[in-house]
Image (cartoon, rainbow, N blue to C red):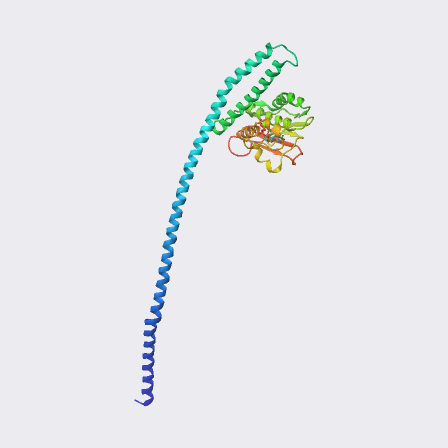
Length: 321
Ligand SMILES: Nc1ncnc2c1ncn2[C@@H]1O[C@H](COP(=O)(O)OP(=O)(O)OP(=O)(O)O)[C@@H](O)[C@H]1O
Ligand SMILES: [Mg+2]
């Protein structure tokens, strides 16, 4: 073996010993330290995850408790609502009997009392009759609301002459219009419209719309009713030159008991039920109701439309022939 070969062998042996030494030192100190650090970090994370899991399950329990409470409150509210609705219906129903007795006796007394403009008895009896009329209207509205709320509200369809219905309602309302010097106009439709709907309920809607228009129009104002047929719908519009409706209030005025704040005296002449009942009636016919107004002081046009022939299934009404 030459010296050169001996030197190379030693060098290789030295390199092998050195790499073994390096591996041993790395494993003993560096890797072990790294392992320890990793384990520590892992342990920390595990602790954090465990504490987060505990917090989460606490929150889940809290949420479940809240959901249960809400469910109970909801059940209680539904129960109270049913009681309120039942009470309203019983009260409205049972008050009608004594009310019609008061009305009957007052009418008899009115006929018996000596006639004369300034007669105190007559004035008092007149007031009693007016009050009972108002009470009767309220009772009827409350009965309707309670039927709507309990899902018992139904409309019945039968064919009738829409032109005649509008004439009847306008004639009925002309007494109120005259009292305020209001020009109550009806634009007649040239063709007779036969519609299949609930005549009594549709006249209730129109009575409310024209009644409102007369109530809210100024003294000596103007109220116009017009109607026509369009694509199978009977459309009816009532316009007035009254205070109009704020844009922000357009959706609210069909809510139960909602009344605008613009006139306190006019507010007292109603309960804010008419439009909500009208909306239910129109909806029950598969129709739509709405209002157009350019804003306060600009007058209002209330409109509703119902299918000329009842719609059997969901969708648009049949075409007119
Ligand atoms: N033509 C109108 N012009 C301006 N405001 C109107 C008109 N019609 C209705 N409103 C507003 O909408 C509110 C609700 O009308 P709705 O007919 O439901 O109730 P009401 O007439 O006050 O009372 P009720 O009809 O129960 O006797 C009214 O109080 C009024 O503020
Ligand atoms: Mg009204």
